[in-house]
Length: 621
Image (cartoon, rainbow, N blue to C red):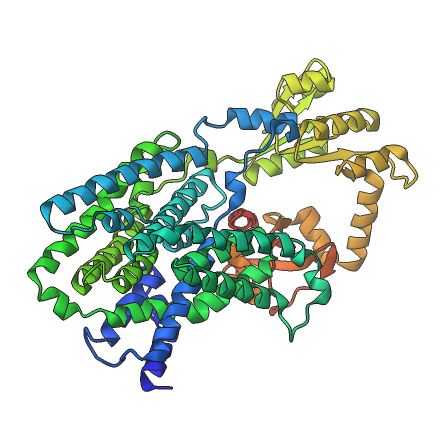
């Protein structure tokens, strides 16, 4: 162990704390770590000197970085649901979507970027500024998947079509250059005739998928705290594929990237992914970024007039290469957001560092040229996110309210609809009763008169085209409408049934179809029990004014793993219960939130809606 190792480890610990302390949000952590490495290394303070241990840690860092990049790919985005498997409502919604899917938009945008990268590489070669045409093309075509994903997570865009499109663009910007780099390095090193051996990496990956495809289905039954079998499997796959890659003349980063894809396709639990993220971003990856900065000799780079010219030119090339992507993004999104997307696409540091490491090992690039590329890449990671945050505006399709349709206008549904409308829902009430329509049509709710309650007719009028359907007529009508709505594809159906009888065939059929049932008796019993057990809670329910009781399912990964006391809005709400895997959990300050937890909480209406949207926003890791 050396003092340099201690200094680097301290820097890894201190860097994110300094970013938080001085509220530097425009700078990605990875870029900040490279800058810290520059300060500590031979460019400035000379506190860190490279040695064998640090070299190994740097290599492990880039391997784990590429592994986690492979795990970031969401393969569901590449799947096209069969129309035969869709409900009528899903099919209708799919047909109503813009013709340019996120995948098609991303592919078109990336092809435009690749064409521009080739043109720029030719210009650099013709001008004599950088003669390695293939390497320049690879570098100009790269996108930093890690930076793009982190920014999309911070803005909670991963579940939206805009975020999905940018994610796919970034995936292409990492996968395509990586595969091209593998072919290039094999040919450049004189091993082109053995290029076919690279297929062994993918054969090994296929064998892992075949033999371990059921691993996580029985993992919980055999795992122990002292074994951590999920981590052992992940490291076994990483090491095996990296060794195979190096043995067949490919780059270790290709083996690591394929290992990430394999583990992702094995569908591990969210907890497994979180642990791997913790190991990668908490231990190994920061060594790679900081030591990359340590190796840079900025004074020597700036002493070369050619390097001084190359830094701004490479930065311009990185930026210009992605600008034509605007025309691809514009086929789906607004002009302003298409410009924002093309700006974020300019960020390129992760694979650039890995590519330059390979290029230097092959002696295909000088240290001055490599340093110019790295500094230009750092500039893109400052410029791109900053411009994106300044330019991006939510897409119209992202701001839609939850649609609620209520069949039946009465003294219960109308007041409920009025209160829901105040809470940010788009509520419509329907009735076929002329008297009820005349009674409630002047209320602060949209009450609509229909000629019939026939299910086919309601479907034709698009009344079932909703997120939530509430049925508040008589039991017989509610029963038939509920089954028809569920078959049509309504996500959530809530129906009123006059009596609850466990032996009632009607109720069993509704429950098996996934339809929620309510009735006066069960509601009255629960309210009476609440009045006896918790009189204050009854006041909230009946006379709470602006305070209400709410439920939300946690689908936002940014809150997974946080203790309740660490939630940024905990002072504004009171969490009374957590339902996890159908079990009720009493919440404490140290209770950690998990994905898919159902939180029962109360709070003031003004702030609760923002909190519910934040907790319930799909923002997967």
